[in-house]
Length: 141
Image (cartoon, rainbow, N blue to C red; front, side):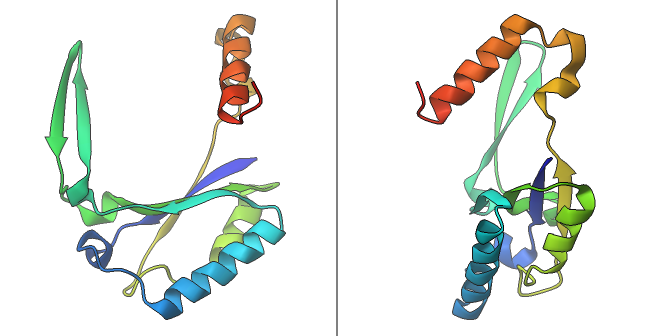
């Protein structure tokens, strides 16, 4: 099972405040544990929403909205992708994480869909296309 582990933004992260050397070292040690255990597939921090945009869809129309965005608690400051056996295992790993922010913070865990979960609508042709794309992204083509 794969999970996206989402680090919610804080007022500090949205202000562009960089983590301290101490927090960077603690996160580095945590990430090292994740990698050694074969749990971490990816992980990155994100720039504040002031440096981002949103593309809104309405039928065939597209509208670009510049950041910053309101509701800091709904924004993402970073993420990991974990590969674990269960939601409980993902929870156990997240509980070991250093607090990723200077202030109180929150981490959300969401399971990633696997191809077989899409059922009959995921035809053999679509599956072949998906596998080809994954091979290209992995540098295997």
